[in-house]
Image (cartoon, rainbow, N blue to C red; front, side):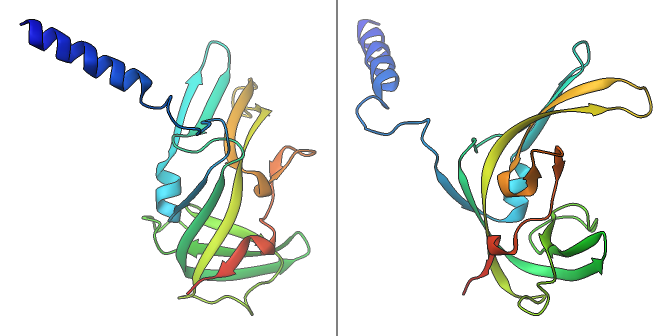
Length: 172
């Protein structure tokens, strides 16, 4: 019994100090590489109905982190109307037939440079944003805390925008 207690104490000390012997700072931004589906799987959400607050966060990514999404273009279309000068790309790893799920919008027409079947990397950064939203059905005003791509958010209008074309590149 005495040995078991000693082993438990040693295990607790080793576990408690395991990260203390390195120079790693958990608050420093990191880089992660994943498919679009893996990125989408990171999302969690919760809401506090009493305070009308919603939380949408990523489980393994934090503000400032760089994300490299390595994937293959499944479908690419361009909408060059006056209001929607953007290219929509659905990535192959996404487990959905819904084009809105896992689709990324890019500024302008990039269909001459990218095609279905191309292997690409989308490089973005994580941001935490907070905004208010009106529920049109109930008239309630909610506060939303949301982790998303920094390049895909316009702070001035508090809306999402297409990613800059510089965020996507070919990969072998």
